[in-house]
Image 1: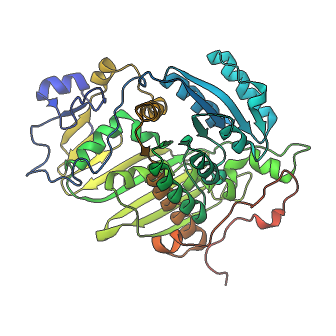
Image 2: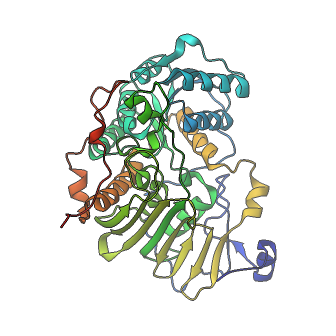
Image 3: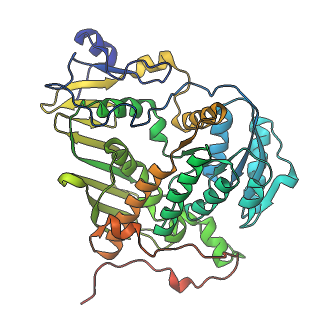
Length: 453
């Protein structure tokens, strides 16, 4: 199925035309099709137009009223999200910052001044576990929630109660209670006419959006299964430093602790799981899985998972994620249909292995100047705010996050876990009143599935 000729030669030799995704009013949905009829027989849509969201993807957000933005969580992703927001739109000012640690906050304040010429007032820089409330109450119009995932449901809930638009980094929760909080808050945000965009940036990546639209129009037929992967080397970690309390170490090293990150199947692999739930418009009904901890240095979570997700009508998704150095890497998604298969490399093949569609990178390069999906998701966020349009992605991301949680629990326990079971579970991992200081570390152990003999 490999195609070794260049895209330009391929288009010329095949007489390719702009496919079903087309050039849609600056949306960047550029596609090429190898034949006038991709696949055999009439295409039957998976979902009718108007029942699913296709974002407009201009290079920059529309101009409009000035907006004041706050950042909660001044780590690496928080810094990245601020840069993405300021690159996405004019007329945005960062007016408030919040973090548990002063050194992280002041570093972010310096970065914003150096890179964007904006100086956040010191009296709008807030430290502590309640900093999120102070940022939101400071008069911001919009807030970036980039704290460790455990805290995101509470921060989203508070922002929504105050009528503040939210950008929520993924995942949006780590446990069943957080999932229910986000689902309920999403309804409230929609009722208030708020714009809530999440960090599942593939929803704003031009090639993915083009493929999504074609799949909804039926180019690969009914979806019958798929495979999703995030296999890479070991992620970052923090060695404990002298003077750090238990809680400080855990939060600075948050990506390695179950209660803070949700484990990497939730924190990172949610991207890939989300692609399949997005393409199908469905969530899995049950999960059977295994995983283990082989080489992780800190924390209490696994470093590999393999999950069999079962959807309605007998559809199965194989999900695999691993963070171990010295192993093969694979970050991709594949969706199989009755008429063809889509690969996240930007290609669709029919059942005989013939290429029937390929995303046209060359045309996109000519048509657009902004191709970074991390920026484009903020373009979409600001556009909805300035147009006064309610747009809430939180519930959709909560569903894919809970799918990751379901797979995690199946691996931890060795049991097949059902959707209705995990969505109603009495699972709440977040301390009611977290404080910097000592923690009963004996409560944080690596899960072992099944029963010993």
